[in-house]
Length: 278
Image (cartoon, rainbow, N blue to C red; front, side, top):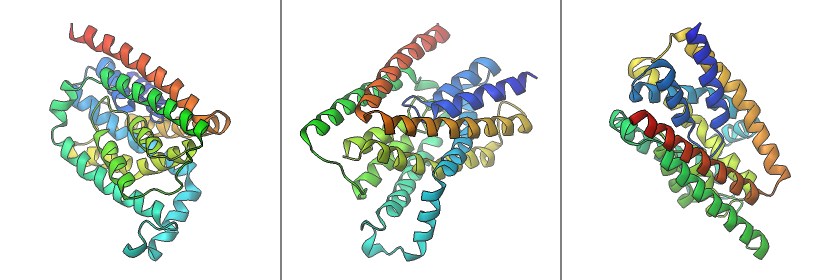
């Protein structure tokens, strides 16, 4: 029964936090470390496994866009890689490749990083970045600076690096990638779409990497699959709620609000981490 309760809890945490500017991986790893007395490394590996659930949620939510991208693959040509009709497909391909290289490089050192990079300070730093981004967005709206409609090569490399770094506990994948896209001039809902669709191959790959590396840690396979299912269902509901919020509220305000939440949450996490160490 304890494993079932833990599965439900971590599935809920992953499904809610994945889309917010706080580290879902850090949040899940903290819950697992506290509830199951796991090492930081195994807790982080289990958190990576759960990313596959929210990848399924993103795929279900953006299924029309995913089908359209798949249909474009046969017509893709290098000479028109970042043309208007192929820019999104190229962005996802290049950014996924970059994040894979960065992420795999970090995974080799994850056992040390998991214990050395407590997430609170980084979560708070992401919050500061989001508040600043929101204020920049507000200025851009007021001064009529406009927004970009298609991603380019620098977008792909920058966002790919940000996503790869999110393998580290405490680094918010959505917070860093969305902030980077906003600072590059993409409007709010578009930045969410680019970021969340990009998460699908990376998250599925992270889950597969954990399974192939040494199996799923912490709880038996049946309970692990339950946690995966819960994260997928909750993730689908929460990503829809976030996109709906962005359509109703000026995105600069959303950035400032979530940034303040991340600063508060990061500070609280620092207190918890120091209490655990002490």
